[in-house]
Image 1 (cartoon, rainbow, N blue to C red):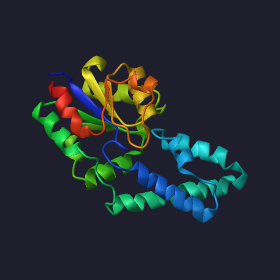
Image 2 (image 1 turned 45 degrees about the vertical axis):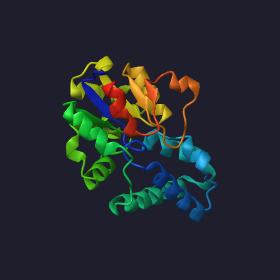
Image 3 (image 1 turned 60 degrees about the vertical axis):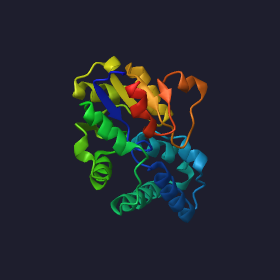
Length: 219
């Protein structure tokens, strides 16, 4: 059996199928406002903090003026939040089984997400799993977003676990790179984008879903 003293979960695209909702909200508002938005553009910023995404949008769409770009950002966020509050965000396969397994093994768990804390708490609360994690590290808790390793170092520090005895579960390239830089073993469960060989080399394993993780840890 592979022994880890703590497990750190990303949230968007790993615990919840949120990435598609973010994209659909952004595309809907962009189309409504006449912005040349696309799924390819959205995918460029997977795993990046909201602040960094917004800065990029202001640069990409600067010809529309700062006020219009800010309106696009705020309307997209409001549309996404409406979906969250309505409970229209499905949980990813294998989440509950993995949480059960880790609790059976008495392995503590954290959420370390580039999202903002209110959104994280809303999703975890609505799904009934917020109390199954020892803590949350959010965008507000770090000065540098993924792929910087700060968020995972803070999560491991909260768990009081050594990096090599901690496991990160991630779906994005920025998240995998952040864990790798932190010296923390990482399993990738890709969401919208598959890893290339360079990214695979930074992981312990790449799985299709979280369903596969308990068996891997039991080996």
